[in-house]
Image (cartoon, rainbow, N blue to C red):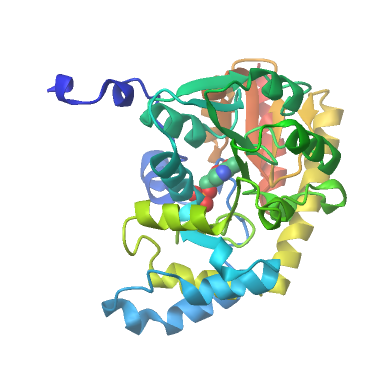
Amino acid sequence: MKKLIRESILRIQQYEPGMPAEVLKGELSLKGEFSKLASNENPLGPSPLAVEAIKKSLEDGNLYPDNSCIHLRDRIAQCLGVPAKNLGVGNGTTELIFLIGVAFLNPGETFIMSESSFIMAKIVAQIMDCNLIEVPLKDYRHDLDAILKMVSDDTKLVYLDNPMNPIGTMVTQPDVSRFMGEIPEDIIIVFDEAYFEYANKENFPDTLRFIQERRNVIVLRTFSKMYGLAGFRVGYCAAPEDFIDALNRARPPFSVNHFAQVGAAEALRDEAHIKKTQEITESGKRFLYENFESMSLFYIPSETNFVTVDVKTDAQKIADEFKKRSVIVRPLTMYGKPTFLRVTIGTPEQNKKFIEVLQQIQMND
Ligand SMILES: Cc1ncc(COP(=O)(O)O)c(C=O)c1O
């Protein structure tokens, strides 16, 4: 039967999502609390304004959703100052990355990204049978000069997750301006800004400007992180109108459900939830940094809601030890960093528990 399957599909290293909470409860026979710090979710839960609006809209569940997501696109347009015609919505950013592959990539075209960037981009390049080039990071950041050197006549697309997952670093406005000045204009540049809301805005590149300038740029953002709507599946992109049209042609009808649209529109204006999330993220990061320093563990200062730390031993084994103690974290083994562990900033209690368990594991080592 295998011979019926496209070879490029069989070569893919499958995406490994964090385990769903219900499965974890079953597997660990947990009666009490556990800390799920492996998927960069919002530990405060969904935006309360979103939840209220979704509850009110439940009775509309018999109706197909608005395929054009017009109300949500209008809200995003207001927020970003970008015309709604330049906005597309998808079933999470993950769907949009997939659709970019389907809509733009031909077999054999070159797809450039950094080594150990968000793995979904690599999967899409593999699905579309592209020539995938993964450029090593420099000082744990995208090496934009090295990426420019890899560009050739066959290059179709460069994917940059900024801030990047799973490392948490970002490239800044001057870096990106220079890069955009040098890269040939016919190459599509995807800026995946899933963690935009957490990043330090002082030096964050204004990528929406490139769309006004009619560059071949797609900016991706998500409602899964800051807005706490990961389970509803909704993300958006800003891009030239022709690109939005192409993505919509490739998108399965009604891929963004009604409740996701209603919730996302409200979450955008839930300033209290956003502020609270930003505050606990910042204080949580400081807490983790201080503890890593006192444990002499190398960590990478992060522009996101997670931190990557070098545990100086097999991170998979350490993650297994954490799991036994009801804390779920992500080893970066599949990203080629076998001693690095990625931990999502949780509530103050979850962060404290994470550090306590890390200390226990280190003492037993
Ligand atoms: C860089 C990056 N892009 C996209 C996503 C996927 O987001 P979504 O939940 O919108 O599919 C993630 C999720 O972890 C991510 O880290």
